Image (cartoon, rainbow, N blue to C red; front, top):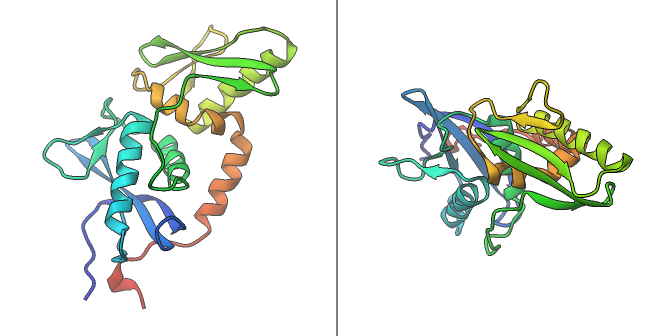
Amino acid sequence: MGKTLDLGRRIELQSLDTHCGDISLGLYRRDEEGIPQFLVHSYSSVAGAREREEFLRQALLTMLGMEEVSGAARWIRFPCKTIHERALRRAFLDLTKLDSDATLTPKPLTAFDKKAGGDLTAASLGAGVYEMRAVEENDASVKRLAALVRGYVKICEMEAVEGAENQIVFPCKTNHDALIGMLRFRAENVRAAMIEDEATASRGSLAAPSQQK
């Protein structure tokens, strides 16, 4: 007989993981002493399910700069001990697209932007503040920098720094370089990301074995 586990609240779902027998994978949240903790879990018992969970856990640790929770096997959290739920949910869905053999390496803060015609950088200024910069300033790069700022504000729930052009800050006042790098593409294409999120949310929900027919 299936058993429902006390995993807290599911905040995201990959309902069809094509890299592991089309299993469903959930991202769960619980709060311990006011600190959000997260867990990747599948109720599936197919071969490779536990290994897939572990790969995605390692992906979150490496690609988002999260950390393990001492004394709580498999649970992870952000080093700032706060929540960045929207960014985490978006990154989790993107990471489930990776094959379990994929090499995990944090993404850089500088990347080429085709529309700007050059590199754009998310320069870390400390205390969670990032400034969007272009190697070559022109009309196109100015527009792309503004778009990148808006994208990060939306995707990562960051805030604009008052009186500072192209500067944004995490409310936790902590640097999150890996998270910024991971979601760079999504920040550049924020409208497409929102549409994809809506489509994902409509695919159904993950049910425990006791609730399945």
